[in-house]
Amino acid sequence: MIDFNNIRVIAFDADDTLWDCQSHFEAVENHLYRLIAPFCDVPAQELFKTESGNMADLGYGCKAFTISVIETALRVAGDHLSAAELAELLSHSKSLLHLPATPLPEVVETLERLQAWPYQLVVFTKGELQDQENKLKRSGLGKYFSHVEITSDKTEVEFQQLCAHLGILPSQLLMVGNSLRSDIAPALTIGASAIHIPFHVTWQLEHFEDIEHERLVKITHFHEIIDTLNTKQ
Image (cartoon, rainbow, N blue to C red):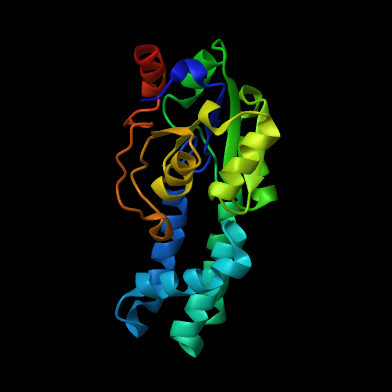
């Protein structure tokens, strides 16, 4: 069971937890798939292959994704694509650097209520530094958080570093996020607690088997964070 009286920090993932991100990426993916479909059997597998191969060097974020999209188009379709088609795909990919970052339903209202509670609210997200900082600014949510940590990945190591930076024990951290792989599993492994709120689409590289754990609460709407904290104390 989660000891909510022991929680000092609530950390929030950003993309697809605070604002919609993946649906914008899917629009670019579908653009790519339409271009390369005549030249391969399963376009999605071709992009997945490229992204998986690039992960160690490029990590996560719009820039890494853009490189993988263009690389996939060139590898699969090659000279069959015109310069104009590639330019349009590149422009569409770069538009992700300016996605709206509009807060998802109930996010603002919930954060406003949580500010009155005895918790430190922080953002803990992975991706490219400048891109994530810009999205947080565009979202208008920065005022709700006392600390923002952007990292290249979110494993047990990064979660332990977050706790060290904040001066807390892992048992005093509650992580809120949409990704079982990046937000939930590593938090539980180090001894933290977690609230999982799934998004309606999931990046293929974030797919993960379901988790059942005594320190994990699963919700479907953001405002249920308040209900969870109220009923579990």
